[in-house]
Length: 124
Image (cartoon, rainbow, N blue to C red):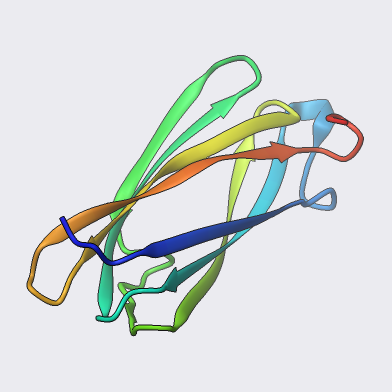
C-alpha cells in the first residue's frame, strides 16, 4: 500500500434535456477530479462503480481506465473527466474505487465515497 494521498472530488448534474421521466429514464452527468497530493506520480489503471437507484437496484461497472484513458497523474497535478449514467429512478447513488499504480509498480485502490444523483427539488 502506498502512502500517496489521492483525493477524488465529484460534481453531478441532472440532464433534463436527455431524460425522459415518463419512461423512467433519468440521465446524470458527473465530473470527477482526481488530485495527486503525493510526492510521486500515479497511474489510473481502472475503475469499479456500484450504482444504486431508489428501488435499491444495484448495477456494477468495472473496466480499464476512464473515458478510454489511463492517465499518469504527476505530484501536485489533477486529472479531470466527465461521464454519465442513466437511472430508472429520479434518485440514486454511486460509489466505488479507482485502481492506481504507484512508481514502484504496486497497485492500490482509491475509494470513492458515495455521492448522490438526484433530480432538482427531489432531495432537500
